[in-house]
Image (cartoon, rainbow, N blue to C red; front, side, top):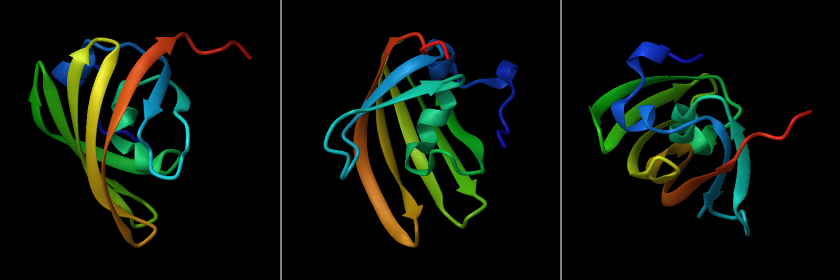
Length: 117
């Protein structure tokens, strides 16, 4: 469940586009992870991708946004997304996942459109 409506999309993320995004720096991933996104605010919840989460924008300006989210499975997090370019973001994220803390910095970049199925 997403609490943000399209009209209230964070200013920094309003400059980004849906599509195929590559996320580098995920612990234990070995290589970059590619994810097709219809809404780039999902990058705030990269640790909890695929989980049912609600989110709240707690800070917002044209160059960065901070989002706090809580997931139905008990996990939660807080992410700061900094706009480098409309196709590149720095993500600082921390929280609790599977009863363990996480804290890391990621790089996300849009690499194209989502593949057609």
